[in-house]
Image (cartoon, rainbow, N blue to C red; front, side, top):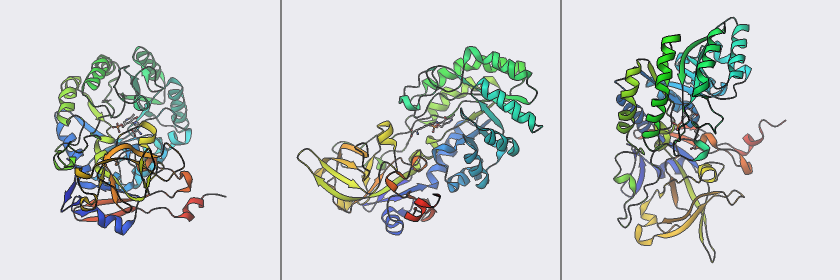
Length: 431
Ligand code: LLP
């Protein structure tokens, strides 16, 4: 369930009118719903209840401290990929003992910091990295808890940039090499084998690839448990969400009104496929969802600045750009775009095709091409849906555009959780 719905012709986030947010904070602004994020967390937690499990939120999806704090208070652990993410998690009150540290290129400083903070595990992606961790832990007279990331070589059927579990990718260690590298690790004096990890990709919209990967890795887990007494298997993240359901053709209704689930496949399908084989393994199960928890919990508000008509096209030029939300430009990804006030944008009757584009000087700066929309006018307020994951975190200052603001809604109140940058901010760190 997500909490963006029309009420009296206006799009609301929980009990907050998004027109009001745009008036107060300006645009472009990201708006997140605490209720949605916590609802998704609770559903996943309940579905995994038959397992001894820990949900480690993938911080990379949305790392605002207020979001991390929400999830830390709900009991979440965190999947981090940099020293910066660990720093944020600690600042938000997260428990380092519930943090797993992933990533193919950890720096010595990051390894030292994570050792000092006593993270639960380093998810190791290569022999070279294992050597480094051993040396650094030795120099600090401590032992590093490690899990190797196994690459099960399954095709998750998703965009090539976010597919990670095949041998063509830079991630993890091949199944046929994993035993030998665990043996090396067992001989190292400064590492302690605690688990095994995998992650096959992101925005996966069916349960099957997860089940196949678990099927391939299960025998390895059994062996590692016998040999080294490993305590956990992390099955990674990657659960897909619904981005595209569009207005039901001809009905004039927008999808929020009749979608009860906002997931690509239901959490029940996911749990149904993974819980039975995992239960048998009798180790703690970690999951690392990012998008699933926050993706449909956020929108990007933007105003139509100009309408431009050419012989070939109608363009709605909005005040958000690819620097604010790069997913359409980078992955050709679809985001639903809806008018916040339906009164000013009519219904299906006035539908026309329009390119919704940003002000950045690149032809790739678009949010939608040839999108059927109600007739748009200058000044209309739009919501780019499903922007809670990999939205703000991938934003940049390209074209010297200040980063957008972020707000968090709880019930009938909203709080600014990150100020929009100013022009001064753009040059603050230049020397
Ligand atoms: N665990 C690991 C090891 C990962 O690499 C990732 C994501 C996750 C968990 C969380 O995956 P999720 O549950 O969010 O699918 N920027 C891209 C997505 C990149 C995902 C990278 N790794 C996008 O906007 O679609």
